[in-house]
Amino acid sequence: MKFLIGGLVAAIMVGFCSSAGHATEAAYPNEYLAALTQTCIEDGVSQEACACFVEGLATDLSFADFEAMNQAVQAERLHASMGQVARIMDGCNPPATPPVATVEPGYTDSYVANFMRDCAIEPTDTGYCLCAVSAIQRLVSFEDAIAYDRLNSWGRANEHPMHMEIWAAWFACADQTRSERLPVKRREP
Image 1 (cartoon, rainbow, N blue to C red):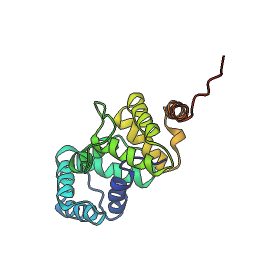
Image 2: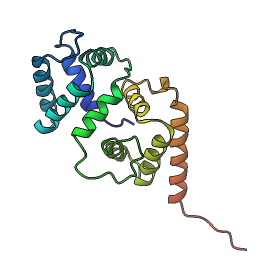
Image 3: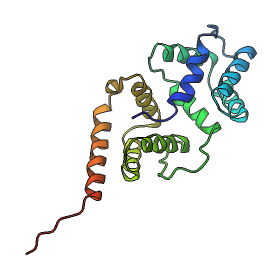
């Protein structure tokens, strides 16, 4: 399964990084911010959310860190700033409707809503998806969930240090929801 912001932020980052310079100063060049805003809008995000995202980046993340993250994403490597960028985007682009699952402290409404939406695309039931999103929130931090999603999008989820624990929890969810759907056969005494 694929989850979360992978497409949106990755498309913004990868789509833009090839045209960006390699400056190391803390301030974002104005033309960089304008191009990043335009790329975001072209990716189907509202102008308001894109402006918020770009402002959040310029305020909360140095240009050097964002550039380093762009280069890491382009090379399909993780970067410590991925979680921070996801939080900025999620804060600027909340889900249209509140998520049906519980959002644990440290996670965002957007993460949970996107997880549930993407999970429901698969031929699974809501019970499984609720259990699975609860499991990942219980097992790993938001930043680790973002890293897991990114590795998964690159076909390398097994590289995440919590991969086996996450999959074990998801298999337990599958077992639990399967048993809830199957009728209990009772023997006559």
